[in-house]
Length: 336
Image 1 (cartoon, helix red, strand yellow):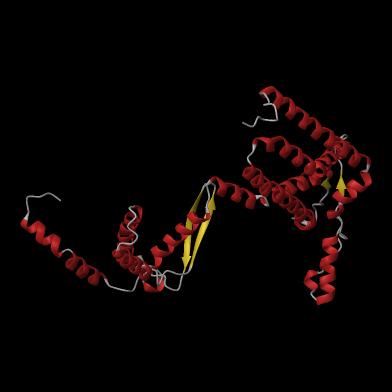
Image 2: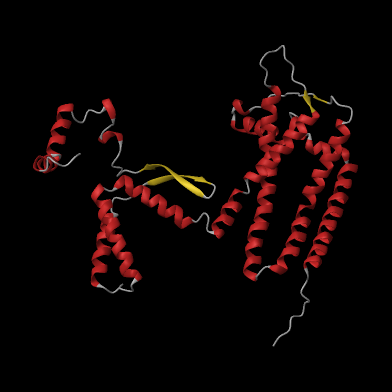
C-alpha cells in the first residue's frame, strides 16, 4: 500500500497558506504601484492620451481619410481643458491611478498565486479546465481594456466633452470625472469580454448547453414549418420510438418505419431560429424560413384580414359544429 508523501493539512494550515498568498499579492501590488507612482509623467501621459486630438486613433482616421479620399473620416483638432476643483483631488487621483496600474501589472502574478493555492485540491481534469478558463479569461479581460483605451473611451470622450446644448455653456471637465469614467468603462469592457468564459463555465455546469439551445431552436422551427397534424403525429411517434429504444428494441422492424416517417416530417423544417439568451435560460424570438406557414401573406388576424368574409366564417362554424349540434339536440337535458 502506497503511503501519502504529503502530510494532510488542517483548516488552520490552509488559512496560513492563504495568508501567505495574500501577503505576496499585497507586496507585488504595492511594489508595482510605487513604481507607477514614481513615474508620474509616464503614467499620466498614458492615461490622459485619449483626450488629445493627436491620439493614435485620430491619427489613424486622418491617415485613412487622406489615403482613401474620405473627408468624413477626417478628425478636426479639438481641445478639452481638464481642471481640478478640490484641494486633494490630484494627489488622491495620482495614488489611486498608481494603485490601479500596479494591480493591472501584477494581475498575471496574482492569477498564478491563486491558481497555485487551489490547484492541489483539484483533480487533473479540473486543473486543465481551470487553465482553459483562467488563461483565456485574462487575455480577454486585457483585450477589453485595450479596446476601451484605444477606441471606445477616446470616441466617447470626444463626443461628450465637445457636445454643447448652447454656445453659452462651456465644457470644462474635472480630472476626477475623467479618471472615474475611464476606469468604469475599462472595467465594463473587460467584464463584457468575459461573457464567452462565463458561457463556457455555465455549459460545463450543465446550466447552459449547446444541445439544449439546438433542440429548443429546432422545436421552434417545427412549430412554424409543420402542419398541425404533422406536429401531433411526429410527437406521438417520437414517444413510441423513445420507448422502443429504451427497451432495447432497436432491431424491431417498426423502428425503420418510424424513422422513415420522422425523416419525412423534417423535409420542410429549415431556416433560422432567433433565440435570446438570459441567465440560466433562453427565450425564442422569431423564425426566418422560406417554408414558414404563419407568414403575413397567408392571412392576418383581426379586421384587416381579407381571406374570408363574416358570412364565410358563419358557414364554417355551422359545418364544424354539426356533430355537436346533433349531440346536444339528442341530449337536451345536459347543461352546457
